[in-house]
Length: 346
Image 1 (tube, helix red, strand yellow):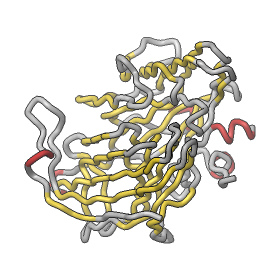
Image 2 (image 1 turned 90 degrees about the vertical axis):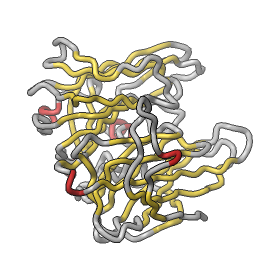
Image 3 (image 1 turned 90 degrees about the horizontal axis):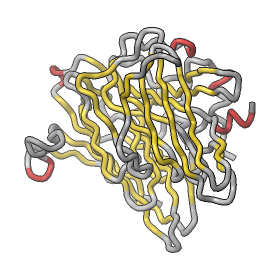
């Protein structure tokens, strides 16, 4: 059980906070290009932090956004510097939260496993430049001077020191245009064991209802696959049953593990009532040692995250055949299991 517990956890600074008003120049997309970036902009920065050759770590900051009044965030834009494996941007509503502008060692994905529900991911980014535009009428609601947690997982695979850094921009929409709140569902499996110098496939089926998660009203508008450097492909489909007919919702060609495509759906897709997600990850282990599931970039993962509305809260969910054909979601699984999925740092 301890192996399952550890496997299920995800893998001095200058803080720039500011507001600007966009509406032209480089932020405007062409009619045939990506969505235009519009609205009042509020920005936060993580780092820069010196990362030595071969170093890997996860560090967080907690900082207030400079919004003087409540806002409805309709777009988020993350840009990552050298050495960034991924970044998670959280909305932190914990009244006990204290600002800490210095990147400090933290447990990966601890915010998403927060049992109080007061800390929730807004966006997960692995690409160097990642823009998320929510559907019309959908946003994240942030309180005035909202506390934001930024979690950075970085690794320096080079022979020289680098400076890791990240910037997150939040774009506010007219609140009169917003009817629904967005959220994130994060799903994967710890059932990874890739023999040395071999290829392997992980194929799993997750049923939300088995994990006491009701997604009957959920509309999913964006989805991103996630592996580490041995991953060669990720596909996700919805099915009524594990052996039923597939409706493919994520099948990038090619899949690039370091810059995984975020596939948007308009109209949004839904999960069949009583059905679930069928997902598959392919690997090519070119190393001389077996590789298993783990949060380090030198281990492997088979996950995807999906953005949806109306919100029923953020959830971290896993399916495992190896550990008893289980489907669980946190925080729904309760403190006994979820606290074990969130062990303290070593």
